[in-house]
Amino acid sequence: MKNRLWQEEKGMWQIWNDIGETEADQDRMLMELERECLEVYRRKVDEAANAKARLHQSVAAKEAELATLVASLGELNIHSPIQTEKRSTSLKEKLASVAPLVDDLKMKKDERMKQFADIKTQIDKISGEISGYSYLNGVVITSLSLDDQDLSLRKLTEFQTHLRSLQKEKSDRLHKVLEYVNEVHSLCGVLGLDFGQTVSDVHPSLQETSIEQSTNISNSTLEGLEQTILKLKTERKVRIQKLKDIAASLFELWNLMDSSKEEKINFSTFSSILGTSEPEIIEPGFLSTEIIEQASAEVERLTKLKASRMKELVMKRRSELEELCRITHIEPDTSTSAEKSNAMIDSGLVDPSELLANIEAQIAKAKEEAASRKEIMDRIDRWLFACEEENWLEEYNQDENRYNAGRGAHINLKRAERARVTVNKIPAIVDNLINRTLAWEDEKKTLFLYDGVRLVSILEDYKISRRQKEEEKKRFRDQKKLQDLLLTEKEAIYGSKPSPRKSNSFRKVNGYRANGNGSMTPTPRRNSVGGGTPELLTPRSYSGRQNGYFKEMRRLSTAPLNFVAISKEDTMSYASVCGSELGSPPHG
Image (cartoon, helix red, strand yellow):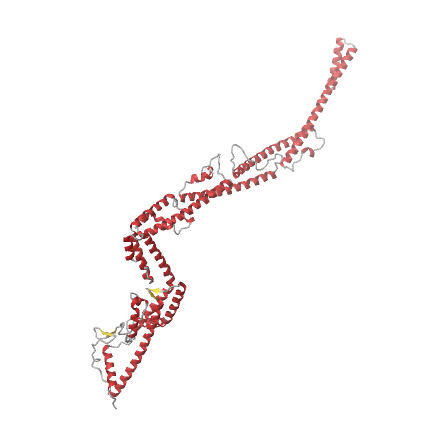
């Protein structure tokens, strides 16, 4: 380059010489040339200095931007390459080394900002749904502040955690809303109400959802659904009770009117409601106003029909009362007897409905009294059974062939053993029954009547009758022993001789009957009152003759008793023997 300058200078001197310039002009022009070169040099130096300053500024700016990006992204493991290189590195090299790193971090920041924006958009949307505001046209409700100076992974994780928490809360709320909506749907179905209108009154989004409007899950919606469910359950409870009352009236009218199956079939579903709890009623339309109105109309129709057939119903319920009293041995109220009731209805002196209600009250009272008498009535049945066993045992003991081997003899023998055990318990049964009855009378402050007669009086009379029977048995045994003794003494004096009556093989013997082949079959027989064992007075013997049972007692107490099967002829024979023996003088 120096050679080129030298050649240029030599050429310029040659030109000046050819022109004829003076040395002064040449020096002057040379000075101007030097000054111009110096200005160009200085300008170039200034430009170089400015370029260096700009490079320094660019490098510093890049380093500052790098530090800001590193701090914002939280990339603490990234360091500036300028700090790690030697000091001899040029500015352009420094700038070239840091610029790509800054560009990468910028791209990473843009991606991180996009992630934050997406998450925050979801957070604001869900927060708006929970708080009750709609997410429309990008209008959001800030729930977390987004700071572009902090785009670290820690901050991103915080946003993601908050988003997941809100998503879970939204899912729980949505599940609860759907649960409430399903319950409202079920209740509306049972009550026959418009489900769409019911949920729309709470919030329109519960009936129809769209892209612009999702299902509302705010607190106000949940509270509205809870209030709606509570109101529907209250309405269901009221309707169930109303329908139960209608069904009870309907069943009562059916029973009173003897309604046919065809009349009942339209309301057959009511038969299950009386014993059904509220949650078990899920059939759609079961509690609708139409069903209740139909049932009410049927009750009203039957009530009108009942008024026209009231006399027949009164007679029917009176018969039921009398049958109940007959079974329980209670005296029915005579104020509503069939004759009086018929006369009062015909004369118009009483309202048939009031008379029927009075009879219904008497039936209820009779059932209540029968329930309080049940224990004593059970004991009366045990006593009557024991009395029947006693009667059977007496007939069995009169059978002289009861021990003979024959068909069924062992069965009767076993029954006789059981009957003796039962008969031995009769005194204790009677005493216990008296004590129970007296306790009942003390508790109820009234007499215990059995078919109109006080039970204690019947039992006391029974005890007297039983004691008289035992005394008669004892007198008869003593009399029999005396007859046997006199007969033995007479035979010892005169000698025994066969009786012509006893030689007749075809004569009917007491307690036996002749069959076709001439053999004798034992025939147990019941002794009648006045000729044999008297019938002990029990509640059954009192029935139908309450006013004369004391006369019967006096008659039984004077009637002769005979506990051994002795024929009339043999009795006369014994009497003649005894009479002749007592009337004839002794032979010696």
